[in-house]
Amino acid sequence: MVIPLLREYDDATEEASPPATAATAPGGARIDIENVSHWFDVPGGNKLQALDGIDLHVAPGEFVALLGPSGCGKSTLLRLVAGLEPATTGRLAQDGAAITRPDPSRIVVFQDPTLYPWRRVRANVALGPQARGVLRQQAHRVDDALARVGLAEFADAFPHQLSGGMAQRVALARALVNDPRLLILDEPLGKLDSLTRLQMQGELLQLWQRSGFSALLVTHDVEEALFLAQRVVVLSDRPARIVAQLQVDLPYPRHRGHPRLAELRHEALRHLGLDASW
Ligand SMILES: Nc1ncnc2c1ncn2[C@@H]1O[C@H](COP(=O)(O)OP(=O)(O)OP(=O)(O)O)[C@@H](O)[C@H]1O
Image: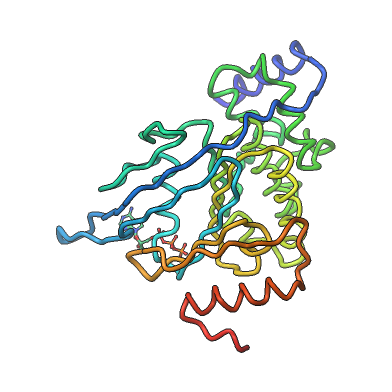
């Protein structure tokens, strides 16, 4: 069942071989989240409220991080922005148009890279264009995306031949090949060892700076949020409400030991109800 898909891809790469050029950056999306609340149906006919009156605006090209206690509703908010489900109340819009369904201009990268183990790296990255039936025209973008995450030499590898960090880079390439206008990052570095995680924070930052997409990141790591984002939004316990928005007023690249980052970390932890003295 799978082989025809791979053939289709291999044929496309052989026939369509335009020079690998940098993808045209489409610019970042503006996202408006207006008074969004969300409830889930739970067993017993009850409702569980995950979000409470979220008002959040992401400017084109802005990098915003969401911090909040476990289970407060962060992933739920990302799912609504992605268009994976409709909000119970309120409005979500991209560049003024209501978000009603998933769209390739908004791509989610999850904690698990979820690569197809039987497909080579290149064929995994090609999934989006292939699903949209544009792989023949866009085959060069696949290699370009792999080059952007530093994995050009691993295009023919299988996922089991990659380290955790490399697999997550492939997941990023699979997102980038679609030229997203919004990258939705749900703890994308959460399962990596701490050194790889630090390295990939820098790589993610460079991809964002070069590509110009808007970014909405969920992380449990306060330092990561402050290192990457221009604005850090702190959420309350469930149902999530916005309790603070911290402007990270430091240029890039940021020095992890900058005293301003320490101040902001203290402030973020205080809003999370944690003692930052340790
Ligand atoms: N499909 C669903 N049906 C019922 N309840 C759900 C559903 N999805 C999420 N929830 C509940 O909504 C709340 C918020 O979940 P969500 O995954 O958004 O939290 P989170 O902040 O991302 O958590 P974590 O940081 O632990 O990943 C939780 O109580 C969760 O159990």
